[in-house]
Image 1 (cartoon, one colour):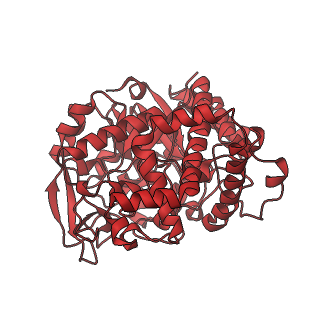
Image 2 (image 1 turned 45 degrees about the vertical axis):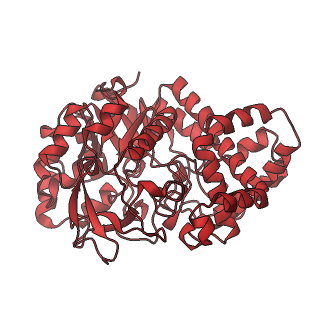
Length: 492
């Protein structure tokens, strides 16, 4: 068991995209630092985020264009002004963005224009070039493919790599050299944006460390088909000659969907090359985060393989995953096993063999999930991370309002409450449990309803858009601090 996850503590789940700000979406700038200070003042040790890669299909952080690169939307325009790479007037009059929802197209257009201005300014001064060169050299193993992929994709109006010319799709060396020459400036732009992301990230991470706040990241088990990873490492995936998947990932029918979830991600060929790539991925992300949530941990023991021709996830089959071999090569690491779903004894054995804490989800304790009793706080293990809900759930208030009468009575009876503040009553139940780590989404701390839900699995519209209209206030901070101290989770 990792020491960072073995002490009694608590934290908040809030993706940086949901932070307030004037530039269309949250980023790594002043509001992120302000939120880290707020967490510290509330006695929290953890800030949990969703994946922070460059967004692909549906703006989902789980469909990133790279398993290694950072999201350029997170580059702080305010910090670029402070660094002298943007004139203050360049960001003084932003469009009228919604304060409660992210319009990704508008935010991306506004920010991309500023990043290109910053790149021009960067080229005219030399003081930062040595650190930029070091960054490019140290990250060349993934950065060069990602920058080239992004430049080609942009030049082809964002078409997926499977629709590029055959010689580029198949990575013919001469065609790639020609593209590198023709798209040299755009490739440099992409490298520069990743350099900025890394620099702003390290500043935030360093500030969090001084405040005693650790960062929990999220590592999706599968990668997007239209990504630099699949394009650059076709041999690692089950693809046909045109680059299309022959089998894809998903999950069978479950709590979220009667037809299962057809994610569409290509599946790995678990030969020697794939574990090496995974170890590089672990190493990279563990330099960014203090701990990682392993999304869909079940897939490391077995995963649901769906023929790519199937319209739903119903007609799939279970296929063995890499199991212990991968984690033996990794060694001791601060990993959280997202072990929700069709948990088998093999999943539990793999989790326990390496001491990974599992996840306990309080909302699941009062519904029809066959494992509902294991989600009741009196059944928790110490080595677990307990949540009221996650990004895939409704907010606690929204969830409670949709319960049928029997489930609602069960929840109220168990919690010993009338349900006037069901979100905080659920938070109290999680905080008072024996689980080493307790986490609540920011939406539950604010008592928000379904309008603040982050994601509805199985849908592609309206997700990942919720934002904080303003920074959380001191009154909420004091309330969370009191509960955290009361149940022995305080960082102070």
